[in-house]
Image 1 (cartoon, rainbow, N blue to C red):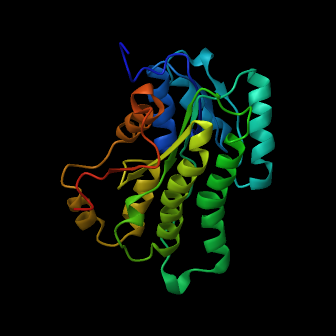
Image 2 (cartoon, rainbow, N blue to C red):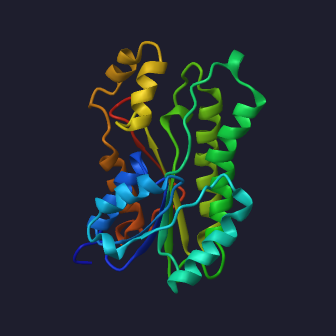
Length: 252
């Protein structure tokens, strides 16, 4: 392999591509040579991301709301049929954050977080495991967990539960889908410099102390995207069922 992390010729789906880590991942993958299918709920955001990619005309924007979990399988099937080729991989960045104290947490809020972060993940994996959805010679799926699943924080019960579930899903899916040559890994970032973080700094008391725990500095979304690109590449062809922590030292 002259360049083992090249993604040239690979067709990759990125969810949550309208902002944050999903946007950065889309841009990085395009620069690594991939053809990207951008997905998200906000058309305007997807268009902004598309404009920042390498060779925008080479990529496709396909808005979809993953909270419509019963429709995910048919949506993936339609995408593959439209393009006329199976996917080489996917990066599932879509999801929601949640900073809600236990005393204020309602059943509806808990369900909303679990649908966005857990149910959609499982149903997307199911859709991508279909015989014609991904390339039979080998594919890679990257999920987004969080250090919230590893380090306790107040008012994060629902979010932490959802991200711990994602980590468990990645391991179990890797085992089940391995015979189909589908690799599944997840990334667990700490606080990443995204629009969501800007809101969190206001909502979380004492955020300055949390920031100090990331003594190697705040994480840029591009740094998470590069890890995703590596996991999609042939250089990571023997890696599956693993979790990669990018935290600037936070969990230490």
